[in-house]
Image (cartoon, rainbow, N blue to C red):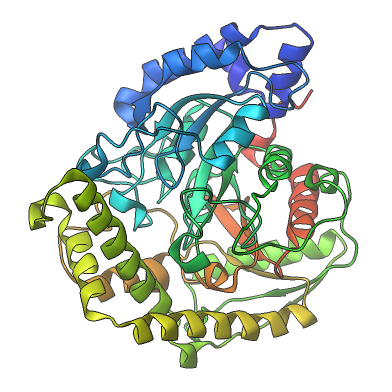
Length: 476
């Protein structure tokens, strides 16, 4: 199988080729490995290559599996794949070999996905770029002096460079959607309670973080969500059940949606002028598709919108790192972590249980405020990021100012994404606009909790009538 042919298909398209015996599973896997070996020394998106693991997995995949034989990569975070390390791009977790599969990984394997490696994150995944000191920066294949975003930047770069058609990703503040925007991909963050974090995690970041994927096509994301929305008994959150399959929503064009679009952030600050114009272009495009669109302002400046993202990660860091140190039989020292994460962990020592509860309650208050807007609007449109590109080195972790870091991430780079991690509602980034030089610009749509179907239907409608570059591929 030629590399160019492999890269012209989405995941479901590759699975169909294999089922119809136009190519075989080993041939597809060898092509994927060849692409990785050709490009990854430069792009640096992979932390662990698991080719032997993938070759063994081929024998277990069956033609009836929806993603039969499709090469797939896992983000090196929040999941365990038996026999492989989960490093979180941290030297403290270098030898953290999984003894069992996470529930989600069992579902992926059952669907026929062939896991051939793990992708890079920033250290402990607490950034919107992917530049861990231990492994070095991941480059954006569209422009190698730029970051692919984070924290799922390794997965995004892997898809953009053609390693795989879709890859696992997680999102706790925009970590699926920001890389999708910067790499010109489709990225959907599901509703809280849609995808299991079990059995090792009950919830990630107080319910703000969830797993799903980045993909070239909308239908791959929808099909994977059908697979991964099977939950374990005893889940702490359960999202509303859907009528039918998410993949069916790809074929259903949404009718007369009411969409509110934003040209300000959630604290009343006006966005960059070129970003505003692209957002208005997206609103007009939605109107041409038959939807009602109007500009809205949502002011959450009285709600301490970054409080949850300061306190909850600090407590999680402290808990996770102390547990890891105990397992290793060591005392944590400053040199174990990048300076920012060391400072953030020590912030956790200052907070009380009351502080943590206040942050959780404030987070849910924001969720209820936003729910009122979804009584009036089916979807809320904004830009995914308020920047054109993210040069490598823009986001530093060699300082100890947590507030500076959060302001950069969620006021300057991505002022709209993290709110929907707090609300728990689904949100997506679609590369439906481009800047004058062709650089992709992601547009962000959010919906009420449980309404991924409307997002998927709209995304598929836009993909059909206004396809982006890497969605114009062979679906047959």
